[in-house]
Image 1 (tube, rainbow, N blue to C red):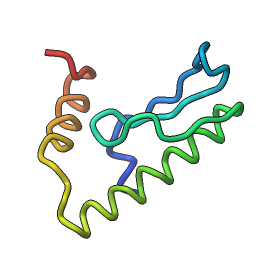
Image 2 (image 1 turned 90 degrees about the horizontal axis):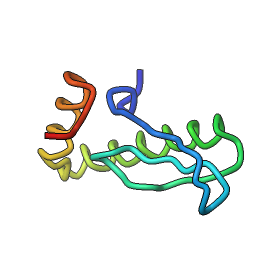
Image 3 (image 1 turned 135 degrees about the vertical axis):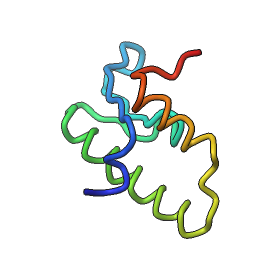
Length: 80
């Protein structure tokens, strides 16, 4: 299991861009895109893994990221 497994990742179709766009709310905004939904998801997982590894290594992981994860994991939504 990788670090990114713990975080919600979203791949959605963008009508404006006419492609799939991937993001990980609370960790990284839109960061990859493509025409193949599965490939975008794979790329997104890799990006999130790399970003989290750097964040943990440099101790820049913000408490807001942890809070976002806990809220999403426990309640299925980040809205108040």
